[in-house]
Image (cartoon, rainbow over all chains, first blue to last red; front, side, top):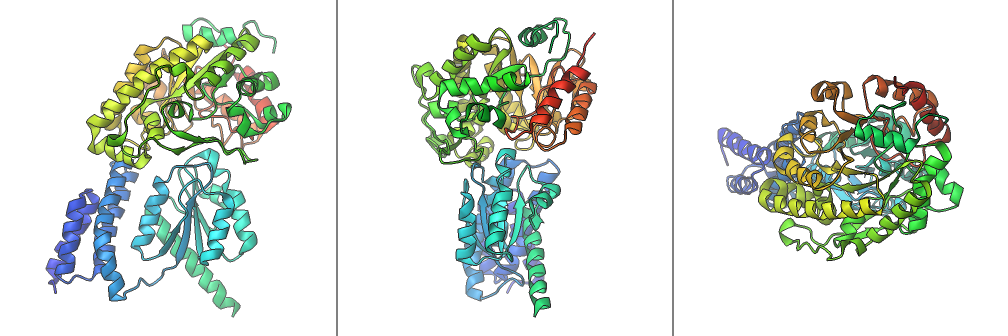
Length: 227
Length: 345
């Protein structure tokens, strides 16, 4: 087992590797974490994921842009590929997790934002059913029913494709009133989310998971209060 | 609208910097509406693949509301299709779905073997767009200005490659991306000449994929500006550069690209832009094409035109394609507000 000090050093190595988009470094520190007995779940959440949060902050401060974020995501995946099997083997689970159907609405072929959101859900241990981009409206409904997912996340990059969101939301609700729907993407803001009847809105990939967890908790409380 | 100058003269005089009676109300890209579709009984998917329908739709906003330009094409797939990408027209759709790219000739820049057709004028839908331009020139060309547009080199590259791969390569394989953008600049110069010969009075280059929401101003300077400059140096006036997003951080660099006018959207603070570029610069835009024009009430449209004029735009010009579902009353208010607030001495 690594000492507390060594663990800190390894977590910092993972964090920095992601935040500085160093793929090889991320893989290197992940191997070290496994070799020296750092809990792979801690290594993922407090190392890799923290690095991605820093990248997100830098994006919001206009220090990083889309290419940098994508390279940070690649570094995170390089680490996650090594750590994930160890987490699964350990049987460790995150406290609140669920499953989510994700996709970009039909008419929009831009999936950079959706892929970053997907990454954060994977990090948090959620099961992600990724429909990809340019997804026909009914496909969201079918996949939600098929997978019995608690949450559906719908993304659009362009204003023109955002306008299909209310229809997807309407159809999802008609089939399953309990499903929680969150939307995001460049043209979406909290007002749009409210107007379209979504339950949640995520400004960026970093806040998407928190928002989803909030929705899940609300859902559980509602179920409890009914019993 | 009985005014002393007709719409076409007004737009052309603006570019020549001659005195005007009113600030022109026109656009460099899509301004079609569902009211035009209704007028002809057509569905949205069919107007992208038929020259007659494309031309009639382009002129319909003028015919119905008095909008001062007709612009083709309507979708972002024309150039990429001619260079090997596949386009999805959503022919099944009853909604408004703009065509998108469904298949790229390559995913990564190092795998792209760019095939430029020897006769570009006959490649893909380019003959269709030029035919639409000819029809427009003949039928409304004496009344309104005819516009056409192309994507900028980087945005076009994003229609030929996987966008994530391109963005990363812009960082990691800058020389390779730079070389591709330069090649694409050459293609765009050729294409713009074809459009001009067919009847386009002015051209807008839309580099919407390279704004400061996506690439850093530093990268804009080193990677995006040089090929844009090459395009503008290689084509004749009038020529407009449009970039979406909060462009204040790169507006001075946009001004160095060689366009006659710069087009910006709502996120650009035009008061700041005017301060930076001085009284002589031609600044078009800012009118919020979706939030105000499509979703707002007539009063919001009136107010937005008033504010745009106060901030000193040289053209009342939507900052993006007009969303086709725009209410009739809003279009009518737009026209009236342009006359109400746009009178010049």
